[in-house]
Amino acid sequence: MDYDVSTLHNDIVDYQRVIRLTTVTGGKVFLAFPDDPPADWLQFNGSGVNVFLPATEFEPTYQVLRHESPVFVTALSVIGLRAFSLDSGDESPGQGLTDPEPLRQLVERTTAATR
Image 1 (cartoon, rainbow, N blue to C red):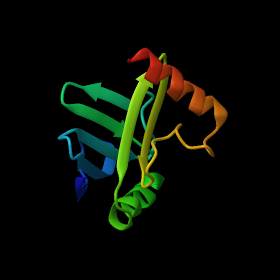
Image 2 (cartoon, rainbow, N blue to C red):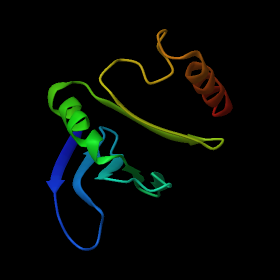
Image 3 (cartoon, one colour):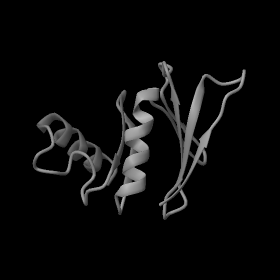
Image 4 (cartoon, rainbow, N blue to C red):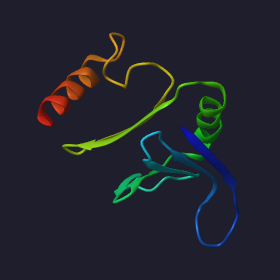
């Protein structure tokens, strides 16, 4: 996965840090880190996804990108539930035995519905 990091300050947007991800399949993920993320914090568009995370999440997110390999990204919105994760493991959220049971069940239902 490739990524670019930007620090900015202007009168247009309410965030000062941005990470742009490009997955190996060409997917685009725009991560912005405002102090107070909007209620619509996960937005899908035709070419990718925009994710607005709290400003305090910038450093941990950046550290995962800098120090872990491989890194996997997951963004989904299913039956009103939204989720975003950036992982360094071999399994997506909800697929590991140590993941919470409700998350595993949601992933199983989602996977079955898309087959």
